[in-house]
Image (tube, rainbow, N blue to C red; front, side, top):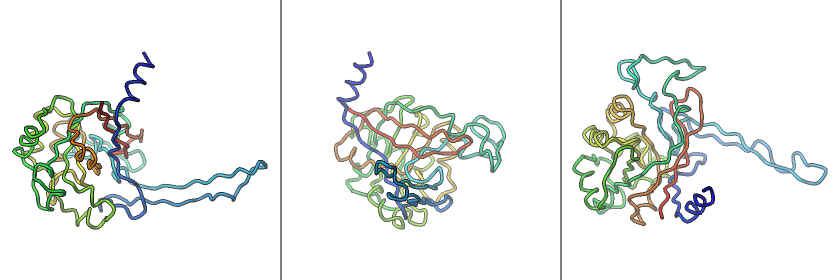
Length: 261
């Protein structure tokens, strides 16, 4: 049984959907930046056999880089998705619905290539994704969204990742509005994600985050790289990812993968 599963996995084509981490990388201005430093160089300590090692120190926010939002990331009127009041502390984080309670994800994934639908490499900064765009993408790609799917929207903004100022764009960018978010929730999605920093159309008072996370318990994944999937016209796949077990955390970096036969 184990060998059969291993053989099946080894026969799959794997797409890496994560963006790289580097000093100066994009980060939303309400979150801390990514920091990196080599703290031990080769040669600082050498074993009698002549071996040495190097290592680094990292600092980053839970919502920096390719990451997933826990359901406790947003509240409305002081209450979380479970309807109960927020319980939190600076030292312990959120007491409920935190990212360490999120199990590793192995689910059907679908890509809705909105930039491709619009015959452009990158959507304009003021492009609002509507339910009509999502329906049109399903028809063009000849797929459907099923209950518990991971629904990924491509805007093309992953191409700007190496240019932090352009990618963040003063927190302006394309994405779904609340009607499109309601389209996603009506399909019973497990999670929704995109290649932008905020997932939703911005600037806005974050109605998509509130609708998905608070009202419907649907996780949000941001800063994905969907370019190779789109280039190969891969619209249906196994989505695999695992958040770090950060106790009390509101989000976590992930290394998402798309697997196809």
